[in-house]
Length: 117
Image (cartoon, rainbow, N blue to C red; front, side):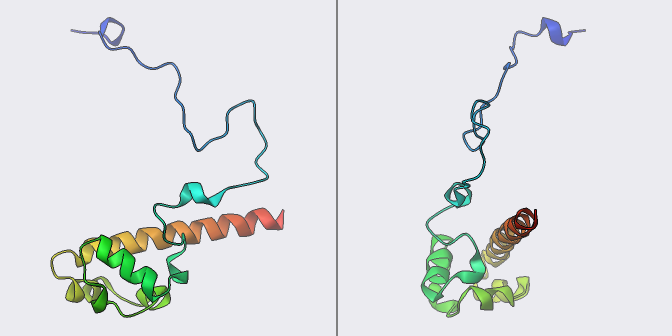
């Protein structure tokens, strides 16, 4: 039987995350939202214009002309509607959109809660 203390692998004693300010800097009053962005598209997909939607779709292997709409219209689409426009990758496209939307909604909720205090 091998015990963890006898393991040849060393566990790190500390971790570093670039998105969290170092311990000596405890000031959080200026939050830079760019760290939350995944790419050059606006963080909230509800604000996407047609060109943003086209860019997002084409980067994920779809045809932009099959999505002649803005971000608000994408919010109204079901998983099956995505799949009918992009048969080989529609469900993944829908999942990515919903993940981005959930992230934007959570951030909006956080900002609203912080502004009330």
